[in-house]
Length: 443
Image 1 (cartoon, rainbow, N blue to C red):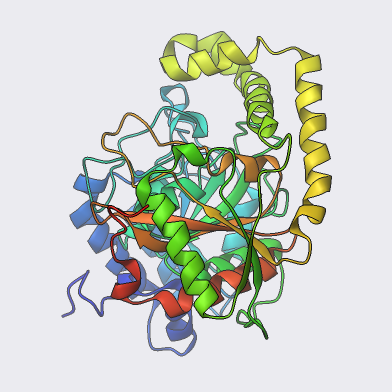
Image 2 (image 1 turned 90 degrees about the vertical axis):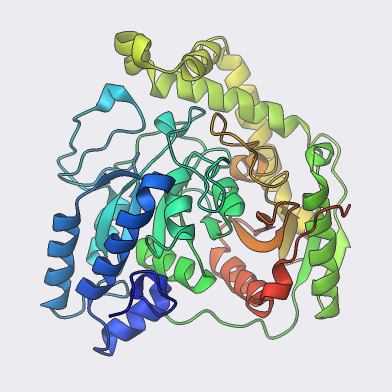
């Protein structure tokens, strides 16, 4: 018998590999789901990735998939769902005691799309409180004394630990890119609005985007295509090396040595492969976007949690209550001014890209920090969320403790397919141990 987490165990497969085996009749969904559940039983006491897990219900779904004709590209594949997204009949706690016992009647639109493609909804993963600033109990799979990042902490940790091949997350500031980068998986935040958000508890509706995490770019593409309804053909390969802009940005002083080294090393590797890379200086006025995001986020979060703050203020964390309280101090005029600034820069981005295919940027400011009280710094993710651009983090480097440091590619608005193709091209040749050596001590 293969052990649940032996190298050849089903839970170690990518979603793309597993889907091919299921389609060929060489693997059952039941065997795949059981392997994931067995591994979860071993590792969950350390990682704490799951807010709700019902093994019997998951196995019932898997047996149903095994007994029917293929529904779609995700037939029989287990998927985890961040616990701010509704799943019919499954408790959705949103990381808050206010919603203890709350069970949605219907699936969120994204979950319904997953089911239509044949996915097995394995369970709900831990989120920071209302996808915000107060983390849950999830630990970093490789270093339990460190944060996995957030707010999609459980999704990132579960994927990184081989508990599930793919998981849904959400991003308002940096809640997909940051935990994925910390945990060493691929995290994809699509263009704003491309994935239907019905059934999502809003944090800040101008930014909130549903995305996904996986251990492979092909898996990200598999799930994204199922959610948006595009063709399921394999990702293409660029006919010529891409042209990239490297952007250090106005927050570069926050970058740790390992992040600085990760960018420099990635630039060198890509140039060796024929990629044309130019520097993008920080445009005049660009830094003002960070404050605009703070205003919009605070204004909208205060209103999205108005009921909770009015009726259950004592059950909100102190940190979240401060966010809500501060949010009410912004006037409507402040909010509109911030929105207008963001819209101006969204229109300007096409000119900044010029003839380039994507922007290469830091994903995080360093390795996952020690302690579980914070989900990390959003400085290197937030502006792309504000600008509604697609972004993907790739595990291309490691820090002084050997923990992952992600590198981010940012694409043009609604050019998600092209960004995924570029990400696959960048990552695939780097899938070797030598490509993830520590960047400790470099600058």
